[in-house]
Image 1 (cartoon, rainbow, N blue to C red):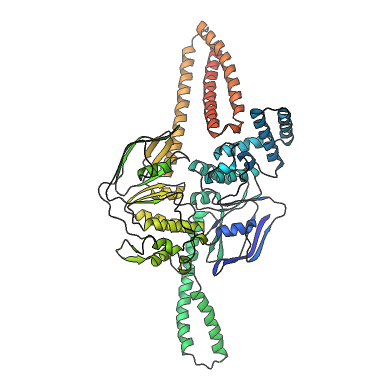
Image 2 (image 1 turned 60 degrees about the vertical axis):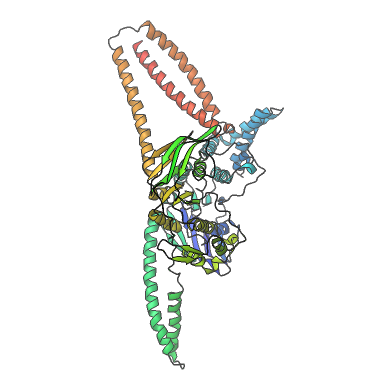
Length: 629
């Protein structure tokens, strides 16, 4: 069953052709990724499919009876709505019933005016009719996993990352037939990314997605389409399959181009020597020559992104942090943290959103003061800071002017110098693009320009805060190779697990409340270790409980009658278990009220887990005593 058909679609901006007569389709259940370099038209294609932009030619056709949703890189939400109203804004009758129910609860809790109770009863009756209670539980799971802020908060007060998560929640809750997503993992922490990865993998959903997260793409998508030099190439497999087949395709193309160029040289000599009076055979050969010329010269150039700038000499002393403390009451960021950086270290920083990773980076560079502690920076250290927020580029300036404002000539690692224009060419900014205004660049092209402005300052200590956001997969591969050969120190904050695994040697894991664990390994090593720790803890608890049971059974063997003390304990346990069951039911019911906020729900969830363990222990003891009695 075909959900989407794209036929002979073309789009160009002036002389820049994004794609030319491309065609593809998506059938029910397919999970397809769109891959291309920055500026090749990925976002433009998604916007054309959604009807937000118009193609120069071609058709986009959806199956009539399906619903669809589009998650933009920077979603547009109604600022006048509350978070609850925004996430449940849908034509779905079930979500509308849940929205009325949640609003009725809020009204009873806040104002409790005449009629509020009656409206709540009506809303609950409608929930019963539509059998919406299970659906409400799913909604609360989605909101909890994506750490959506207070539901009564206005959308206008949310940060960019919170808006993206609200928009993502809205789509997952609405559960449309076809979902189109542009960089859905931006602004999500690792825990959220892994949950979303699992959700999309297991959901019966039809998906078209643009993402730079290679692990996410590899695990979620089963088909890939690539836009390259304006043409579309399909690959029936995941990211690993795509990498292999793309290399094969390019090898064949390069071989064909080489053959065409050799033939073109020979034919060019013949055309130049050919007399003016031409016969029929000569004219045929001239026409064939034009075809060869187009094949030999019409292909894309072999120029690739090159990162090779000079690094400032690094001395013996690099950076020493001694007993650093930092808090934003009641939240603690750093608690007596010390570390001495060594030459060539590549350290990854991991932790949930809001634990203070960016604050830590700012403190190191002196951009933000610590509450206490000492920072000693070596005299030769030159920081290169690639900020999550990005460089505030002047949108009215041309690309080449941005670089010339920093330096006219830039020294390279091999001792040579390049002009601003030559360096821009190495960063894939062609002549026309160099004189384009910054405002005309794509998001990925702006990021690439920003990276260039960081590197040409010749840093020897790179601090990269989410460097992978909006960069295409090909640019990321080149950046990774450059960083692997970089001789200075690096601190990297990223939610890109592939990027982290390839580059870092060990990690600072921000666990919250100022606790930072120095883990010797990559993200995958840490993930494996953490899973093993959980398994070990569960095994130890099981062994302890079994040993305790056996001990109690052994003690009871040979007894004919229970002691007075055991009878009394047995009666008390029965009463305690009754009270604990009531408390457990109250907590479970309280957890269904998402208006309390994520933090309060998390605390209640932990209490419920502790209570369940307690009930299990007391029930086990009650059963043992019942056998004796």
